[in-house]
Image (cartoon, rainbow, N blue to C red; front, top):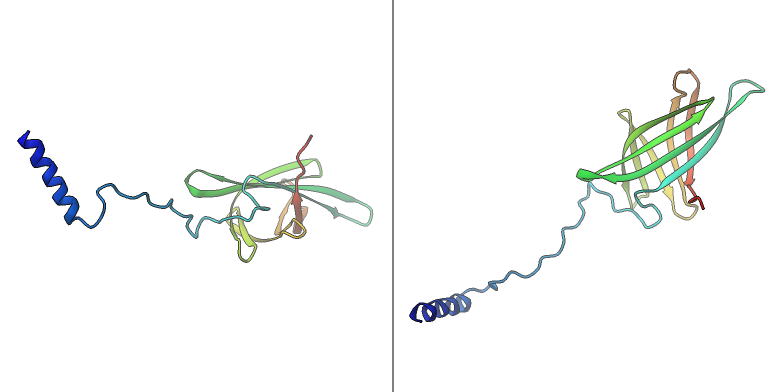
Length: 155
């Protein structure tokens, strides 16, 4: 009984002398760092976008090219994605790493070590990307200023 009384007295003394509570108060959750973008509601990670263009090879021949652009986040706070195209019976996809500034509504995607700028207009829900390449296996240039729109979910 003496030990218990001594323990309670010590505890009361420590509590009276200690300015901070013995049970720590809950701390706020950590906020995202500047290196991880906070995206506007209309531009969430996990979105898919599409664009199309027609490449004119000569006066009479045009090749339709369809583009896809996907954004997602993955483990270790890396913002990944993929850009793909289909044109002239060739389809190709490349992975990318992206970043986005919510204030300026601009960002970049890094494809094959090259940074390509893009901007997002929430009024038109259009994402404009500056990217050019050649159709894989052929020396046909494609891309340029591409205007992507959100893919509509299939029913």
